[in-house]
Length: 379
Ligand SMILES: Cc1ncc(COP(=O)(O)O)c(C=O)c1O
Image (cartoon, rainbow, N blue to C red; front, side):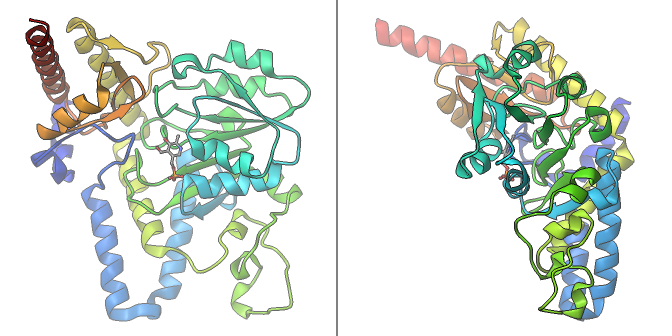
């Protein structure tokens, strides 16, 4: 197995120059994704709209792949430009349907679309970015009609138990921001009883910037028409009838104008690549890297802030002057992020245990350097 992961590193030329542990900010693209971009560019350069029918077919293949990737049906998937875009489409449907429960640790993409629409948002406290379901359960009164949650919290790595949350939600809408999980962990909207999900393409999916997915449960497509529409939200859009508004039945109604083909194809290549490796295998590998990171850090006497029971691809280490530490690491070619009271480490499957050792060794060096600096200062 070690040989398998070693070989896969050749798909990520970034490893030659940097130690990249920042997939929670943005991932690199793998070689097959770069090839999808290049192929699209060649086709557009040489053939332009001669390719339109083939591009539309390819988009539908990617839609089917995306559905499989999250356990949905193709008609429940729309292509978007970002998590924020998807969340706005969801808030558009639900913001007037009663109270919305979320937690104070959510990334603003989860909250702003609801607040902007003046939805009745109730924020549950999330000390240290942790969102225990026992606390959430106590907040679930009859006024709450929607629960919004990230699958994995961006600043703590806390992975929500979505199967348990799905069982707990009752007749409320469950809305999932899967940005920090999808591509690293195996998703299943059916098992979660999710009603809506949104995500982007550029983090753990490693599909590059500009893309995203929106999932809308089929039942809600039937019952809730969107507030916004464009010419391609309409059935048989190519007839260009400007007097009719018979809406598409599927989630494609959220794709208002002509498709962002290169972005969709890149996302398709990324999901295809991840599926070939195997989503279970990727999840196991990432969780093993996380466990090893925790172990090496605790052996070196660093405090880990992330929960040991809700593991994801993200580990946050408590460190004074986190911004400064992140800059120091960067000067050594190590990419991590400063988040809140610490450093966020987010390896993907192609990273190695040796790379984590290198990170911890550098953290120890920075710590002892600043301790000796402090001593000198005090002297
Ligand atoms: C949980 C979460 N949601 C959303 C985003 C941002 O997504 P977008 O720019 O696609 O709206 C981030 C970025 O860090 C995030 O961590």
